[in-house]
Length: 315
Length: 271
Image (cartoon, rainbow over the protein chains, first blue to last red):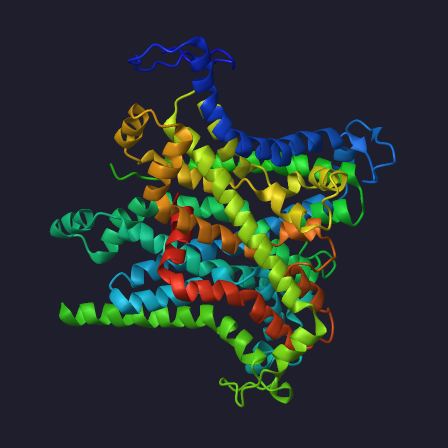
């Protein structure tokens, strides 16, 4: 059967010959069916993701204050120049890198060490540990922020009273960023542990056994068998950390530090939010949005490349 | 050999106990503080005693907590239901037919991972304003009705669906709509349920989009909690009670469906 030509056909699609010859009208109707099922989802994507993305690109070359009645003025690349010459962007990027680097121990290092140490725990005990470790992932970000604000409160908080310190963790430049990293790490570490744990369970034990028969020590089995076979999982967690860390910290920044003190916790997304909704500088915010989008793609592509080259597949 | 194995098992238990305490303690402290009598809120004793519901009473008195919780439930349930339906239809199209542009359309869904929410934020805000959806719950729900994650996970599930079943049903001359609801849905009901829970929890905890649509309003519990968190001089007892209430529905779900929820999250991550 030849599919209907009502849509742009990129390449002929071969199909098995149907038992019954269909009339043209029937063929057309049958051809439309899958598109009809896809229509709601695709329409939503176009309206709320792709068309706005194009508009952001358009806005980035204009000056506008978000007020519908005020005119938009074309300004060429002025927004980009402004963005790249003021120090704000560089600082926000640096803070984002700090957060990503700070998150990697929670999303990769701790999970791997824990998963390696607990391989022998099974059954009921395992179920209880899993339930407890995973729980923070389900805590709403703002509720998490609230309880940590309480724990870290300078005078009455449990942390200072137990440590005997009087640090204002969230309002001191040197500790604010660290606090946000620990809170975000607390949210996701259990999830990452379970992902690595699942990845490790999926490894065929025959490989390790074969290595042991050949006289490999447990350490060697870990280094040369388990970790390489785990590398796709680790690559996934690494990619997730790089792409999502700044997203995860956003609710915490918005509720706990508002980007401060003196901009110490302003990452790229919070900067964008501030430009758009505080300064009402739509053009500048759009230019930042475009730069982050492009940066995102470049980083994601590089990481996928790197992951492909480094990971070993079990085949 | 046996002592070695036992040592390793003990190490494992120690490591997991430490990690479990580190993960669970803040949650415990949240509820412990919320249940202390108003005079004991600053107490550091591990067990809150005597127990008191005064903080919850204060939370309900100060805030429109009940309305916020109801609104959040509406948003979470409607979003998840809509996302399931839209996702099911799209995944069905990908699984049951081969058609021109199939790959391109599929990539449109995968591609959403690369578009950070913040890159489309301003035009979306303007569009919401133009449609009169700002400061409304509809504005929180409608734009999120297509969950790319939902489409991708369901498609993966349907890819393993026995083609013979579909073909046999087609031979019977049944419509594709009929086949979807009488053949496909009954088989993938567990997957739909797991995804549904994941989507409800995600929508319940969502922060960024409601914060944009509702701005400084506090119609949903996440935002109400934020406006309750004053920068100075927090009233910790009622605040912890409100935060506890904001997490409670999800934790109740978790108590009942623990294994399924963990699996749904881990699998969505392992994709």
